[in-house]
Image 1 (cartoon, rainbow, N blue to C red):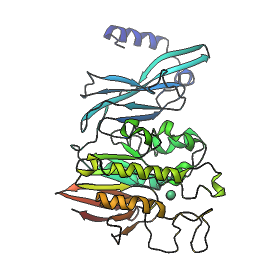
Image 2 (image 1 turned 180 degrees about the vertical axis):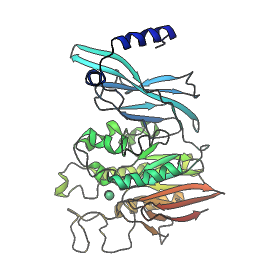
Image 3 (image 1 turned 90 degrees about the vertical axis):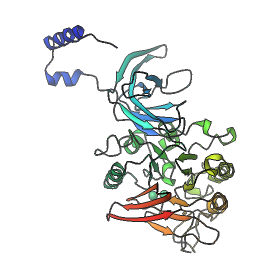
Image 4 (image 1 turned 60 degrees about the vertical axis):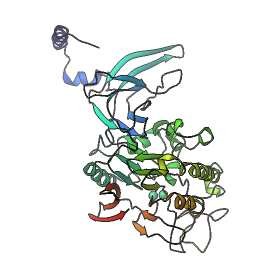
Length: 420
Ligand SMILES: [Fe+2]
Ligand SMILES: [Fe+2]
């Protein structure tokens, strides 16, 4: 909406004449509709998703442009179905048709929707957040580093520490490798960790996109069953129709690095009575194996100088006391320390040969809450890294080599590994 200078002053004068006291104003003024900074998600060559919190029923939108003055901005609303997607607590918008390795500028806004009754919906108008942010799409021509975090579990000092390090490192993408929270009862639980994770980091992902991979905990709770409403599954165009269920898996190029995302699922058997018979992780892991077999043959992987895979549960453990996650029916076996998976032997057996064939250099995992480095071994020609809760694993191509640096944000130590 354009307001002339004269209208602006007239409006200001009228507003001043009728101005209520500040206290009364605070009581009567509608709450701002937009309730957070944007969080970029699911970066790809042609896609970027944007989520943010709202106060009240709204259809969120994003205006995206190829220049910082936003002169060619195009507005994209939440949802691509026949009706605007309206939600009382958050908005999630998919931007598609973008160019690879290209910088875009964007700002967010929302239409306030009032559903007076089933026959009377009202669009009460737009509210814009004036801040212009930017992002860069991924692709073989893109550049920069990736950072991996894991097992933050919503613990405020941990979140503060790892997001402070990420703010300092300014990666091109954040791989949030699972166990972001213990469980999700409501949408607010998810908003509290993904959209407003810490008051010191209100715009932590407004310019750095998040690539979220589920940990076992991210499957727990009523809202966990709907987490993809907020943390959208990746664009279905990224995969063949038979892999439609694999909304978290990705193969994306960040310059010379192929990033490969996998989901190890729950840390208990589908048959474990504690899981209520509602999980289908066995079939899900097998479907991912078929997807991975094709993915490693794709040009994006084959032409990449370096390959790094990510999943939450480790794919190796040298300690025979650690439960390998394949104990039927209920994970309980006196040989093992705990009745749940400390590592995922089934996934290792299915995915490991494909990683070896593809020449994967590093596999980054979490779940055990303690850093560990496993050098390559027989049948396992990749370096296996387990990040702890306070670790940020940074990967970047420097002087033709893949440099992986582990930043321990608790003890303030750094260790560096090179490949290539
Ligand atoms: Fe964890
Ligand atoms: Fe975990």
